[in-house]
Image 1 (cartoon, rainbow, N blue to C red):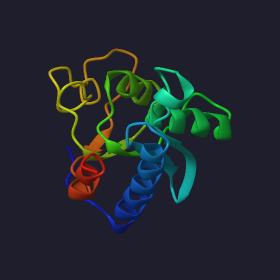
Image 2 (cartoon, rainbow, N blue to C red):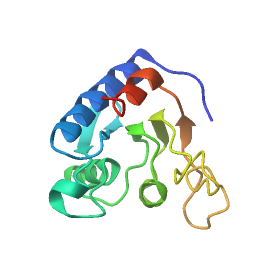
Image 3 (tube, helix red, strand yellow):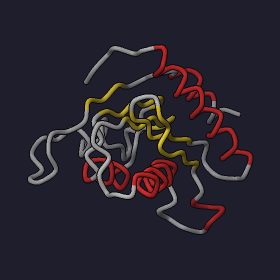
Length: 151
């Protein structure tokens, strides 16, 4: 885990909160995500499972899909994923398989999250072939991310 949060991290998380607000307005869970490499946003996503009737349309998956399409590859080495809610198991597997270097999380999801749950897929170094786990930064703009679920 890493505790250093940059001004850029705060800016990207604020953008994720805006995306999450839009997801909530569309009737989905308030989750927004970005994939960033350097200063370039490669992809963005909002929780769309209910709207699209697609169980895999999580914000992180949508952002990862967009980023892969943009770079034309199934590898996102050196990229950072920003998300208002800790990635679930499915999203954590996708993050690991794509070689994401860093994950910045707003709100924990201890029931089924890839960091704080019983199965910390995102942080486990024991998965053969996935390379090292990403650096994880948690609780970024925590109060604002929690507030998304209180309205």
